Picture: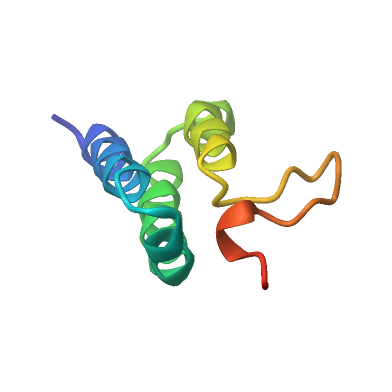
Length: 82
C-alpha cells in the first residue's frame, strides 16, 4: 500500500469516527477532525494524488457538515454557533 492509499484510508477512518458522534459531540470535535483530514489530504496530494482524487472526501465532509457548501455560503452545521 502506498502513501496515498494510506492517507485516504486514514481520512475515511477519521470521517467514520466523526459520523458516529452525537450532534453535540460533533461540534466540539469538528476542528480536530478537520485538521486531521486536511493533513492527510495534503499528504495524499503531495504524494501525487490528482486534486480530483480528493473530491469524494470533500463531498463526504460536506454531507457530514464539516465543510461549508461554498455554493450557498451556509456555514457547516457542525460548527454553527447557537
